[in-house]
Image (tube, rainbow, N blue to C red; front, side):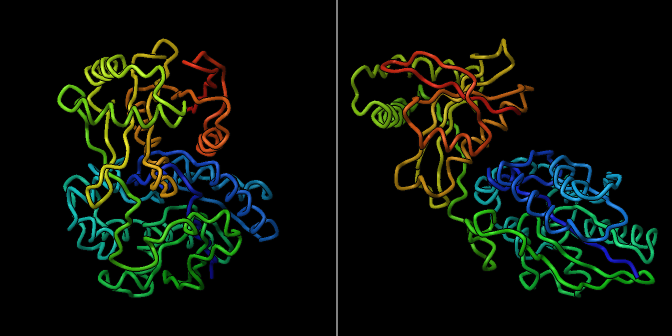
Length: 380
């Protein structure tokens, strides 16, 4: 008999930016690194004979929890990858729900019925994951192995082993980041000992502790926003009204605010990149914010700039700000930029902590309209 530990990767970009990242190679978040440290302590005294991991960087980073205390070769295995989402890759969940609610429902609550041309199907995913896990278990008969994989892959295999039909997938809960599933394998058969155990994570390190969509089938996460391009020429008042609110937040009044200057800049930004200016809408269609990118500024240093990032006050504790960062990361990564930058008032400690949480660090200072600004950068 072989013991097989299946481990989901630590919190990654897709989890915090609320974007579909199957085989998109997103990075681990700051919280994800802390989750991995907790996972390492869980397995510190566990006997392990071999370590395999999906070859995506979020799983490779998570596999480091095992190598921290065990002198094992980390063996990349592409067949342990997440489902290939094809045209859904790196799309915001809010956009996908708006464009195709039927398929979004199937993805969450009846995966065998999910079908997107150009994407892998869930039956194929299940067959792929079962095949590689069975193969590795046979290769290490009588030993204990770790396989680091992904949430939907592990859930699909677990449901298959337990004989849970696709329409009843809710009986197999989603696993938190770094959750552990233990299988026993013998003579080609697999048995679930336990599934999705994340007892090594205190509440402050749990990704799921701040989310509720996973608790009940058919639930729509109202925190998932969609992005809609904004043409500042056609809708100048929409743009300037958001900029006014941002200015007032930062400066306390509209002294020094010159709407025509910022409107002209927005027109240039959109001319250079249609995704440079987008409004943010909740599932009910309510417009709750805006973000603007400057693809020219910093180009010589292979950077991109976030020049406007605003969320209505009543929505600022709804994980929307992270999704705005995710939009910028997606745009600038597609452009091949090495980093994204922004500036923030030096005295705005809350904003600085927020950006630090999502991987930004101070790299310099610049003059603002009325005060010094801290320049912060996030590597891509």
